[in-house]
Image (cartoon, rainbow, N blue to C red; front, side, top):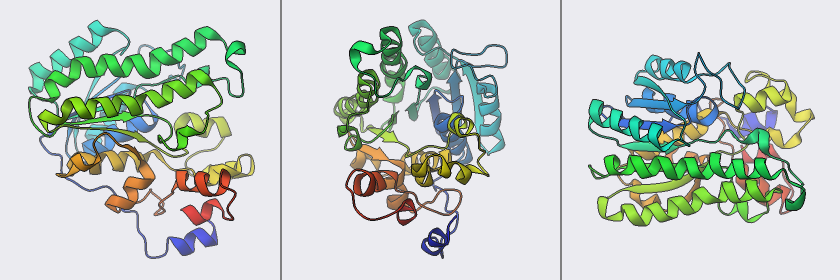
Length: 320
């Protein structure tokens, strides 16, 4: 942390998300790594029972090709944090598997309070700065399947269980707020895929109204996921070394920030004020008064809007 950042963070501590979720049941779809894993663990830390799903297990590796993170590990981390983690290998593109997953949750728990749709796994397919007619069409269409179809299939089967009790929460995880994504994301298929969750949340908010349910879309900022750290050749302890290669990485946040946002939302008795909205981890950190693990409160989208796109004077340090 720079001296400027230290000055801004003076008086702050590592404020975690708050809220007791004991007795609540959550499903984090796409919890193998990154934001999904962190959200599952934080829900467990709040006392929830969390079903974690994904395709990479200790016996099988998904097309993402990262055997170092598995859903069994995630479930163990949930339990170690104070909750109960249950790993269920699931391909969310396969309706029969998702249907069986929800039937199992119903049989074992009889309720579902929180659904986090965090399935993705398409980063390897992105070709930035490439015109539609030059894209690999199979990769582009695969992004739709991974980032849109999975979310719709999962909600189709999970929502009848979630609406049995009032107050259910659906979180559509995406990349970029609706406002940020008004700037073209430099790949048409990626752009469409990451804007779709905003409309899914908007539509589900209308459909859940009579059940006192809440649906939001939620994005992290510049996320220091395992894949991103590996991409820059750094670790969570040495991540600032990557700023020399990518200056905007100075605004990066750990997966804990979005995880704390989900916990705060799930525990908020007045969360329906957010329904249908596009939210970010940074915005909710301010609203619920929590920080990242280093005590800072990165506002990624404010930084990009004002400085990167808006041309205002400032540095990432001014937005932490």
